[in-house]
Length: 189
Image (cartoon, rainbow, N blue to C red; front, side, top):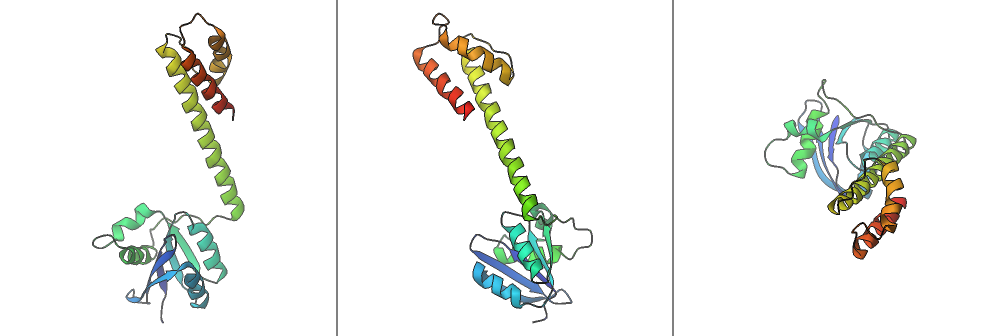
């Protein structure tokens, strides 16, 4: 096989490949499982491999580079204009193979495992902060429904909530007090 460029459409368990020869003509069209893909790539002469940047692509990119291939990852939005016809996995793989050869294409850097770990930590932290903000806003909204406004901010709700929960004269029902206590506990987890 004279494959100079390989486009891979990544799936969870199967992968669709389209290989192009030196003139850009299709020379391979194949569907492989993960295990067969790794063997295929290990036995393939060095070529340019393109994939969309998605979960799992970073690991595959590192493995393919270790096998001597040049690997380029692209954001899906930049590949989409190269898809011909209705969506199918083979058409996506062909579009990836075409897009990866474009000189003006923007590529996603291949990350090291340490970079991926750091990115995961940032994503988890961002999610935790977003959840905390959502809980605080929800608590503030519930309190406002009972005519008990609390200023914005973590410190404001942290300072005001214990007193509001203990005040038997502020109009909060027992059910709402229980709910607010549970939400406060969720915020502390």
